[in-house]
Length: 313
Image (cartoon, rainbow, N blue to C red; front, side, top):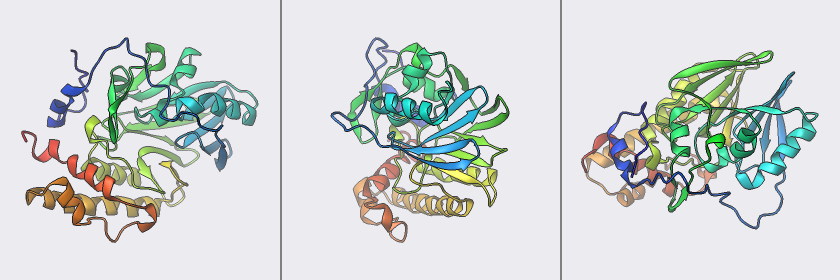
């Protein structure tokens, strides 16, 4: 059974991937949701030609240029037809010619098959491409696997550290957030418009997933948000994977929050506590009550430490 080697992630956590199947003839899951009503989309204007679209399963950032439309993430596969129809109606039927996958999860890659088959450029970190070419366990649902996607639905323009492209008159800088939410997270920064699409490492209305099974970890999230803060200024509009747009001050507060939680969980690990015991210490107690129950987040964040501090456990 071949194992997908994620070349830019040389940590002990790679040894925990032996459970991942790589039967490339398997069909990708079309969606995590069945029997759903047609999605209701809403859009928030971020700049003259940039919108945040909610309702596709995760936030989608749409950027109009004179030769087409670029998307940062594509929502769930079940919502792809409706999403692309909505975008066509909003942007005068201009073609979607570029798609950024901020990571491999189904909420981000559900439009890959349609757009890839139509010839779109799909930009992602190389680790994201590798996960999409195998079978990856879904966060909190490890019995369900996502992938592999067909070759034409996988990223066809990948990178390891950072890069940039020009979309007609718009430059996009993008880069890697080392082992943050997954081991393939990226951001896309529309510098001239001062709009940052931050992807799954950032959420503004719920506790995020720390997908430790595919290389994410709480230390990487804390460091990733710190790196994003360094890219921005007081006027930057920051589009998270879920929830409304953030300011730089809000992003800074999140970075500090995750750093604090990271420190508390390290202490729990060094005391020999179990994940449940770490949860019972309530390391998030003064943070974000409006985000709901933090226990699943804390458990995943604690487990994410294993590959970094107890690799032989």
